[in-house]
Length: 261
Image 1 (cartoon, rainbow, N blue to C red):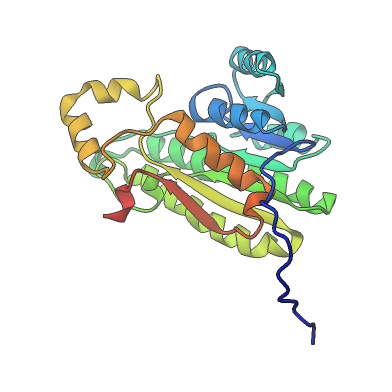
Image 2 (image 1 turned 45 degrees about the vertical axis):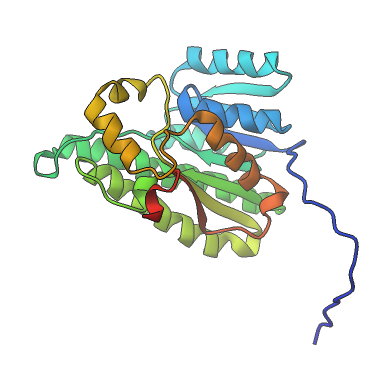
């Protein structure tokens, strides 16, 4: 039997720096992905920025460099399995993956079209699955662990009108997170998700110009305010870093208390 020491040894707060690590962020050209890339670069990681739009990626890389960070663009359509294999798999190293690319098409359940169902599920689930598989294979081969962070949603924990397909996709991501976390744990590859509430971005801002929608949303958040990009950034760095070394198969819900009702 292994003897467990209970001596009062000096304690040291775990490190949240990411120096020397390579982080891949999908959907990195705008919004949440851009914020995640800034957060990881600010903690010292070299960030590989992935999306379909080269001009967006170049701008993010330039902005990160201006803040003293390191980032490089990689144009890749994550809905294309050939591009995933040809581009992401061929990266020299992956220590961190933020699986962020996603979409939504809100509409009443009885009106959901096959086209919109396929569009949301293909990107939010199928693409996320195979990007994660590609990164996990590399992490396992490298032999020194890694961190995979799925960008989920509070809608992966609750339901909401006009969001049946989105909720389906994000509940799937929560299940994937748990299953991957269990299976990859022996390889020291940790898998977790982040579940934001509505985050105020240029893309979501127009929704909140509708007073009824804004009041209904704020009424469901006990803290009474929308999320901001900065609210996500600390959680990403935490889950990517040694500070979360014993956390896997779990979810951090950043929702101001929405799912606590």
